[in-house]
Length: 398
Image (cartoon, rainbow, N blue to C red; front, side):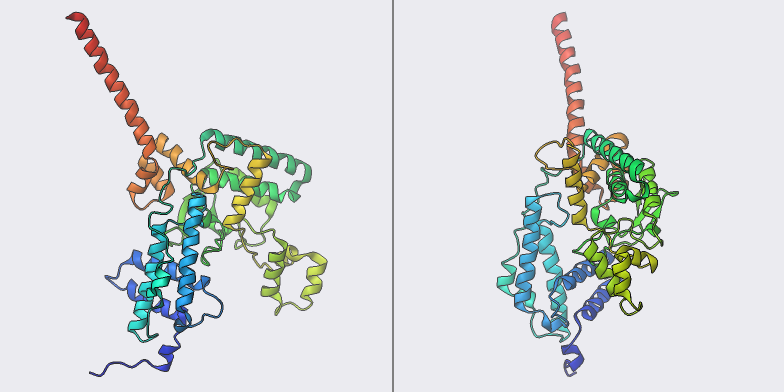
């Protein structure tokens, strides 16, 4: 049988279409669901990262793959600089991401979408970080009970004073309190609650995702599972519900934490309404972008994962929150670890695993191995104390 020759459509295959096709093939029975989901996530992020000039599979050059490898290396360096920076990744993760992109282009060569695999270009591969980079988690932050209490007390007092003085205009203070409570008690990841600039699928939770009666928030989980339930304990609900009353979202699709960045609001209004509303610019000038978006029920973007880090940094500085160790401020991911640690100590490994939604129990055990070691040390100390007392008694008798 004659070998299939690439058609003109093949040689101009749109990059997103090729990715969709490859992921579907990996999703077929026996293809491995987890692999397909991870491949879909990584390749979608890769497409978002590529320059605007890249439209087809053939547009991805060796130079672009070198730049992508450099991009992954920078993210690994960010992990080293700040282990709690959620934009950071380990060197091993960087290599895994690159391997998925390389596997995709191998598929593209096989089907005639291009002649060679740009990801196999040796200079590009050499730009990848070493697998060991960023693997040391000894310096990762855990919010202690004392830190959590101090932080919550400060945002409580700040919000109370602002609401007493300004009422419904105290949106920022109410928002900041809700953010601190959510991170302190939910065990959620920043990218599950807020917009992640590195992943176009993560646009932030909306009020439709919040179910106070059930005590959950439904998020796009780390495994790319939509509707994954994050706990919303009773400690956090009053702050979230009071914030909602002050914010007054006009629709359930409104983000829980909408941006207050004015240029972003103008951009959203113009992109969504310029073809629908006559005299838009006059209306924007008269009422401002937030009021216009509310009138037409156009949800603005959520704040980003970087924004919440800046908010927490500012709040810790303003409130003079005592922070243990070498850390500058209480970081969002430190809240997740702190919540897990509290549950681990109080209820055991299974409760912490469920709250943090670790698929592999060993992940939870590894994260809180210091607790197990500490408890084992106490058990050993007690045991040796008993043995030593028995030995001393026997010596006295003899």
